[in-house]
Image (cartoon, rainbow, N blue to C red; front, side):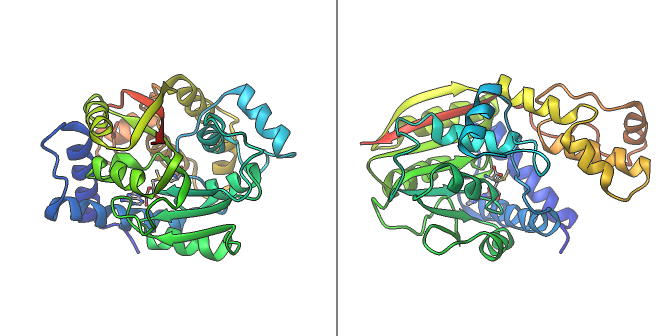
Length: 319
Ligand SMILES: C[S@@+](CC[C@H](N)C(=O)[O-])C[C@H]1O[C@@H](n2cnc3c(N)ncnc32)[C@H](O)[C@@H]1O
């Protein structure tokens, strides 16, 4: 499958509507449905092209956190990952007021789980928990189910964040990482989160925000009954630190790319598009001169993406 120009246009214009307009963005109807369908197609394609162990978030870098992870998961890290994307997952649970050693029997739901690698990583952090991942991309879910699922302890289902297929009060912890910026109706997702969480349960929400989306989030958070917001942490600097490390010569990302068979020019183009996709603009990336020339000729995209203002971790408790 390939994403046709129509799908790309629906996705990028949907993203702009959602993230650059505060109130006028279509929350339902044809345009919102078109955005969701484009999103599923694009992440289906990503699931087909991604390698084993790939996560799809920008990551964060915090040396202390990395050490905490290594203390819990001996041998974590190289050669299979730089660990930055996993650090965001670790943060999602580590900053909740629940001891990481006290997860046995708790239900953890990740909404927007991609190919499930992040949730699989969390299963090593909190053994004994029952983890479920949900995603809009059928291929991502199929891949996660085929390669990672382990009975009741780690399972994956297809579904929509705005219409969760779970019973009221059935979830202890709901994790949502770098996914909600594509949801047409953020308020609907928060209401669904409040519905499926049991009293005392926690929502751990991590995402990147434009100025307008911050305002939408604040409004939606205020309007959602049953959720009490207990933290709103700006983690932008730590995310930028990870993106810059990924871009640097000799990084894990560069080394992996270097192993792929392609000519040097193509390698630069692939590196450029991946850097743009994984937060390059947010971290101040400047393309090399070859890419600038190719951009002027219209052969590769110039700086694409939305003007993201901050990357945040927000936590709510279900009352
Ligand atoms: C940038 S990826 C992040 C994936 C994963 N959380 C990670 O950090 O690697 C965004 C994910 O959100 C999913 N997604 C987008 N819209 C969704 C929706 N309405 N319901 C559920 N998942 C959705 C996409 O299919 C994709 O897998």
